[in-house]
Amino acid sequence: MKTPPPPQSATSLPRAPRDDAHARSTKYLVMMAVRILCFVLMVLITPYGWYTWVFAVGAVFLPYVAVVIANVGKDVHETDVVPPEQTLPAATPAAPTGPVPDAGPTVIQISESPRGLAPHDDADAAS
Image 1 (cartoon, helix red, strand yellow):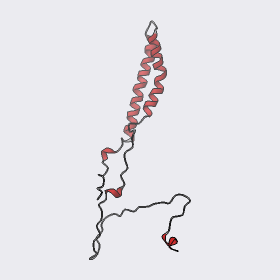
Image 2 (cartoon, rainbow, N blue to C red; image 1 turned 90 degrees about the horizontal axis):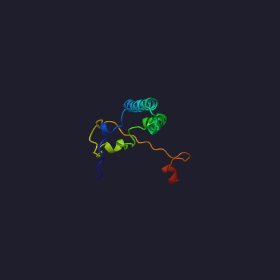
Image 3 (cartoon, helix red, strand yellow; image 1 turned 60 degrees about the vertical axis):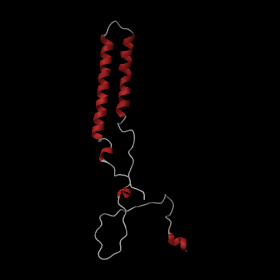
Image 4 (spheres, rainbow, N blue to C red; image 1 turned 90 degrees about the vertical axis):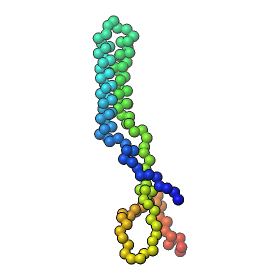
């Protein structure tokens, strides 16, 4: 008998969108502060030399890098979906001896046929 997988834990859920947006905006603001620092150092440090060009490259290209890094979310992998049917215990058929007590909610499965194809009917196949 196949054992069902354990139910999905709340700790395996992805980060809340609000928390993810806060972390990404913090990364962006830190990188923009570094850009401003590069720009200020580029202008203030004299005599000008090769390091001036390094600060200029930082001031010019850090906005692009900051946007790319800020748009990358924390969760790069998707969690596996666990179908609810696998977490339900298997029902054992019992002989009806009286009124059947309410066993709880029933799982209803709906399947669709591909678009443009009629569903297969066993009554049509018999005729």
